[in-house]
Structure formats: C-alpha cells, structure tokens
Length: 137
Image 1 (cartoon, rainbow, N blue to C red):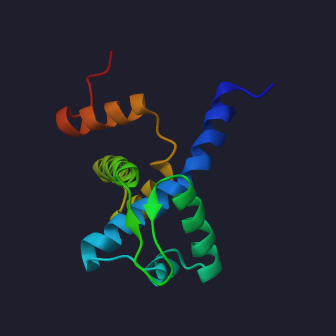
Image 2 (image 1 turned 90 degrees about the vertical axis):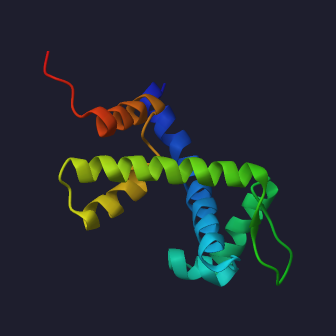
C-alpha cells in the first residue's frame, strides 16, 4: 500500500500540466490580449498536437474555452486556478531568492516546486518572507 506522501505526489503530478497551461494562458492574455495555440507551442516547446490534446482535456475539465481557429480563453474556474498557481509560484520563487539562490536557478526550481509545496509549507514560506526566520528554539 503506497504511503500518504507518494499518494500526494501522484496527485500533484496529475494537476501539474493543467496548472502550467492555465498559468501560461493567463500570462499570454495579460501580455498580448489573447492566447493562441502557437503561443503555447512556443512557451512549452512542444508540438501543436501536444497543445491541442492538452487544450482538449482542459476544455473537457471546464478550465478553458476555445473554438477552431479562435483564441483560447480561461473559464472562471481556469482563472482561479491560474491565479492560485501564479501566487504559489511567486511565493516559492521569492523564498528561494531570500535564501540566496540565484535568480536563474530560483526561476527554474520554483517552476517545479510550486506544484508540490503543501499549503502548510506555503504559509510558512509567506511568514518567513514577511517576518524573517524564527529564532532557533
């Protein structure tokens, strides 16, 4: 029987692609006013088929809306997921920078870590960013 930590890791992996895509869609819309499939192909360095398959799953799951040859938009649920993913990413990246990790490494590492940080750990990271490290006990 798998341990609780392995179960959570598998669950985190299941939502990772969706979170990355809705976050990228939100960023493209913020920067360009729209998000097209080609924007995601370039962002993730994947094929059009990969993007189309992923967008179909996101549409099925109620996170995005699109029609053939039309821009991709986020549903309210997709917008909430994108905002949450962006916030988690910013906290983890800021925390790594505070620890002295280089900007380049913090950007790369936070991209994967954001999906696996528990709410408890995220709260502690936010507190440390705001108040500093607690005194040793």
